[in-house]
Image (cartoon, rainbow, N blue to C red; front, side, top):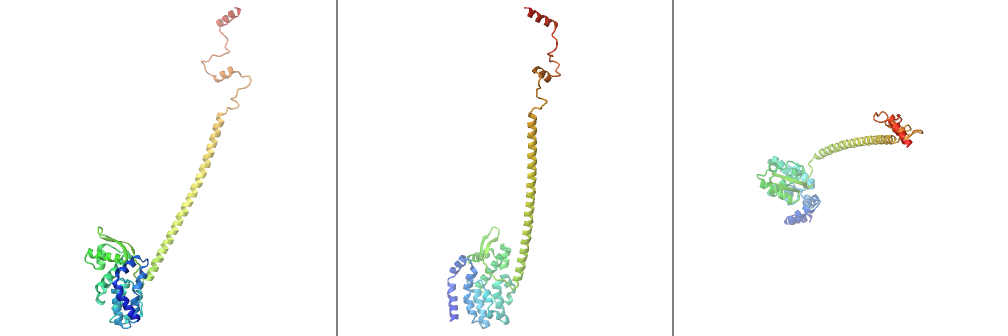
Length: 306
């Protein structure tokens, strides 16, 4: 009964590909959605005890529309058992390539691998483009055509359009620059064996660089604070010195404006003596105490008689 249900699911699901594409675009977790799509194949794997049945299941899974995640299927004991079968071990390697490798890897090993049908070829190229976009490899038309074995730029653009429509990447085509501009990728590719230690090493290196950068920033911040405090201290000293000089200047001006004790008029001095003192040394000023001339004395005497 369980196998019949799985077969019915396989027959119905491909008749509505647009619906699933729409959900992939709308779902914030496309890997979760793909996990639901691969469930019928996981159910079939339980009864695939014969190597031929397991190999056929791999072919069906890799050919089915909108199925992009194969990690769970790859871990099934019935699938892993193909490694011990010389006839169908190549199907296990093919599933590994669909899970985490690229179309270039398939081409390099193609003599020992099963032939791909059109659906498998398209899907493997789509997944390969997703890997190249995720790793931010050279996304020029020439590099992608070489990596995906596409003879023309038009075929590459058609492939990119299908990848965008499937919700695998957010990208734009730039024919003028002959490049594909990728902004984001869906987390649908699995990790290859042995990649975890490399990722841990890369993360540790990144963490050390962040720690070193933060230390440098803290040192620069401390240096800026020390310099700012020194400048503020210098400014305060300069302000106090300036205020002191301004005070001395005002005191000097105030003292200069007030007459000294010796400059004040003393008792017994009349205005004439003050004028004489002010004009001391001027030869043109007539001395007031000089005796009058003889003619002037006679005139004054005659005036008194009258």
